[in-house]
Each structure stands twice: as structure tokens, then as C-alpha cells.
Amino acid sequence: MINSINFYRNQKLYNIISIFIIFLFVTSCNCDEKKDIKKPILVDKKASEKTIALHNRLLEISKKGFAIGHQDDTSYGLGWNYKDDTTTIKSDVEKVTGDFPAVFGFDLGWIEIDKSYNLDTVPFNAMTNLIIDAHKRGGIITISWHLNNPVTGGNSWDQTSAIPNIIKGGDQREKYELWVSRVASFMQTLQINGEVIPVIFRPFHEMNGSWFWWGGANCEANDYITLWKETVELLRDKHNLHNILYAYSPNKLNPNDNYLKYYPGDDYVDILGIDIYDFNNAEAYQKAVIHDLEIVKKIATEKNKLYAFSETGLESLKTEKWFTKVLYPAIENSGISWVLTWRNYDTKHHYMPYNGQLNESDFIEFEKLPKTLFLKDINANIN
Ligand code: BMA
Image (cartoon, rainbow, N blue to C red; front, side):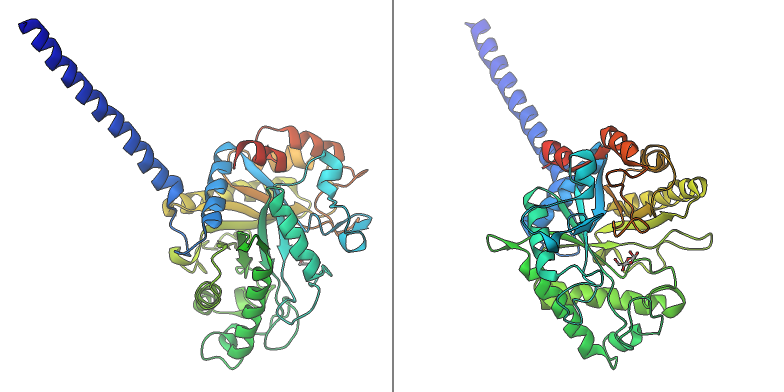
């Protein structure tokens, strides 16, 4: 009898301890998910579920490798243009490797002046279709904005000072608000089943250089920061867009550059990026990429943010094995979520290989490397 009571007590104790251990296990799993995945601290506290899911996906991608991106990938390539034949979706990347990139870059330049096509002649209605198509395929969308100079009407490269004129109180403020409203209207066209597709928005990039009116010698850093914050507030709070992750991307750092000089603050940026090109000097390029991505990684890690190699490439790809021997080793251990190369305009201005191009077979090898994630890879592993 005594033995059986003891047995009963021990069994009860055992059960209680087991339940407690299971409880601890379950709650600790939830905490991890919450910290890393479920509740990222985003610029938009009302970000849609799909936008939060995109953020999670980018985090998961960075643990496995990096998504491969290409600007205007399905809009045009060497010898073809989507607007001439909208019946099939083409891509130079797909023609070479049999798979699409995982990240699709688009640019909204000229939406602000109400043109029907962007500065690179991509019609905005075609762009809407292509963004929806890319999203349906499981791709990730990133959008830059080479907007005109609001003071002169010149293009992005018109270095006339303009930021003081368009931030609150400026004489061109009304015009700028109209311009942002046109961006917002475009975003609203990106719908599937009544829901706006999540996108990464990367405005006012390369601001530490002086080639755009929004950068370097052409503006003050504090005005830039004001412009960024006010732009986010217009899109998020005035236009009620909750489909956007905001990416900040300076250009390659010069020795005295501070990556955070133009940083609008943790509450206004979701993803830290950097743009670095190879100007036909592989060694200098690799050195800069490794050096700068290390800085971006350190800052992003401290801030608990994602980070990416937001633009890169070697124009016309004349260096043999550029993808496997130059780019891959430089980013292999960087921890970036994605890397995006610029557009394929023609044989002189292109950043991905096309059929018959010098780097075609190298790019096929690049696609097979463990960390390069193309569309099928991210769809198979990371949803
Ligand atoms: C630049 C070049 C330009 C283009 C611009 C915006 O780097 O490709 O020809 O207009 O990007 O896409």
C-alpha cells in the first residue's frame, strides 16, 4: 500500500515536471519566433501581414545564402522587350540559367511627372503587370526611384539644390506632395485579390555621392533626413500604404565616409543596403565590397535590421568568370539577404550575361553555388 502511494505520488510529480518542461519548451520557441520573426520592429507599425512575411522571408534567406536580383529583369533584355510581346514573360537570367532571379528590381523615375513610361521607357502599366507576375511566381520586389529634380525639371542627375524647396515649408512642397501621391497611386495598382503586394522601396539612394540632386555636395545631411522622414510619413500615414519595407542605401564608402551620415533613424529604415560597382578593377572591387559589407553588417546587427547588397555589377561583363571568381568570394560570407545587379539595356550597358555573352557559362556555374538563391531556390526552401 505504502509503496503504491509512493508510486502514485512519484508518478504525479513526474507528470507535473513533464508538463512544466513541455510548457517551458513551447513558450521558449514562441519567444524566439517573436524576437526574430513574428514581430520585427518595422517602420510601419501597421505593416500588412504579407509585408511582415516578406521581412521574415528575407531573414530566412540570409541564413541560407543570398537571393539573386536583377533590375528590370522581365521588362527587357538583349534583343527583346516585354512591351513588344506581352504574351510570354522573358528574362535574360532565365534564358541563361533556366531560372528567374529571386529579386526583381523596378524603377519609378518619371511616375512623378505623370508620364506613362519610366525614364528607361518601361510603361508603368507593363510594370504593374510584371510586378504582379513576379510576385505570383514567388519573387521579391524592390523599387528604386530616379525622380526628376523638382526645382528645375531636369533629371535625377541635375545637381541643382532642391531638398530645401520640397520639405515642409519649401516653395515646391505642393508639387512634391503631388509627386509622392503619384508614387502612392502606383503602389495601389499592385494588387492581388484586393491586397497590395509587399515591396521594398529604396528611394534617394547613393546619397553620399554628389551625382544626384539629393546627395553629397548638393544637399545638407539634415535636410536629406527630413526629406526621407517626410516621404515615409506621406506614404505610410497620408496615403495609408502598409505594403512597404524601406531600404537605405549609400554608395561605396570613401575613406572618410560615415555610413550613417544620412541615416534617418531606426524608426524610418527597415533594411540597410549599399551600392558598389566594379569599374573594371576586380581587386579594388572585392576589397571595397568585403570592407563595406562588413561595416553594414556590424551596424545592421547592432540595430537588429536586415541588410543587402542593393546594387552592384560590372558593366558589359568583360572580366572572365566575374560571377564565380570576383562577386561570389566577395559576398559569400557577408550575411546579406540579397544582391542585385543593374539592368540589361544593350551590349555596352548590361550587368547580367545573355546568351552568347563571355560570362554565360560562368553565370551557370554561379547559379549552382550553394549560397546563390534563384527563384526556384527561394520557393523550394523559404516561404
Ligand atoms: C543608371 C543607368 C541609366 C538609367 C538609370 C536608372 O545606372 O542604367 O541608363 O537611366 O540607371 O535606371
